[in-house]
Image (cartoon, rainbow, N blue to C red; front, side, top):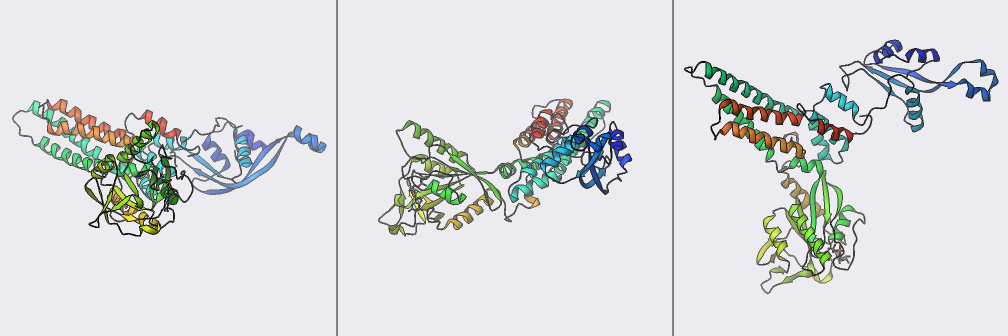
Length: 475
Ligand code: GDP
């Protein structure tokens, strides 16, 4: 490494990082311009040039660039680090790595090893590391904002505050146990105060848990299904939205038997859009499976877009509109507030009618708009309506995910730990079974551990293995 001549390389071999730094005179946190040399085997050269045969070692400049030394603990990992900023070609990187590999104790870092060392040296906690991984994978603006908040420690601060409150409550409760057993006659109000603090933490955790999965949805993508009868134009709409032919568009009803999904960025939100099988009564066993899957998708999605072919809409004598559809769809519409209804194929000459609501199985539903997926008519209106609905679903009022609305729960792991934490706190707080105080304190201790597992303070080995294996090498 940093080999400026042959003698230097011999010397550097066997040195540790700070000895190398001393030797090369790299000043802590300064950028130095250095030249990199590699050694050439004299026998190779001798084939081409007899006159050089006498020399034992010949060295050749391979690159030049900036070198920086960061003395631990003020470095990313907390250890001594030397950064080399060289040119980026693969061949050059390979050459430099080959040269470095001749030094003692040299090996390539494992995926995420720098970050893992940073975590082990208390530079980052687990939540911040997960935030960094999400930031590196972020594709939309909302994902970038959420992961940055987490990476910069905003979520950790909230959790650490809860942990601190609970540890203090635990200390008070334990003091109460000692005090009460020693001096029965002394009135001691400390447990009451402890209960108050715990109730406040319970309230705050409950608020986070009732965020309607906003953090997870923003991290993993909001699931939106396009549903409707066969041939309504679902695949055409999906193609129109992704602006490429990803779904099979066909005139034969029942073509899309399985749900097809595509990732989209709609107004900065990550969306997983599903084109589902047409929903209708069928005797075809395979198609029926597709129909059931479509209905399941519709029930489990965060939002649905229900597409109705305008030719399926019947005008009644009183001017109202009716659609014959199957029971299950109307059940989903009744129970799921998150379904937009759009009439499709308005380009058809005989169908220029304004439909504001439709009746399906005696229940009236509001129409959100009329489009032509094939002719790209009113698609921007559909996207605007969808964006509004997404904001509503995520309880976002200012159009952007400002710091105030960011959820600290971005993964199921966080949610499960906080739910467990809440269960322990509620037992502590209610103590319905009138358990002895020391046993109830154990609940408080367990609650502290649950929070510790979210930030990585207690036994999270199995989480670390999965997390760092997903990091890229060199981070
Ligand atoms: P799906 O079964 O609901 O996915 O329907 P498709 O997207 O496969 O469309 C069925 C047929 O309707 C195809 O022939 C499409 O070209 C046609 N279609 C879809 N959207 C429109 C539209 O807006 N206007 C017209 N005229 N035809 C459409």
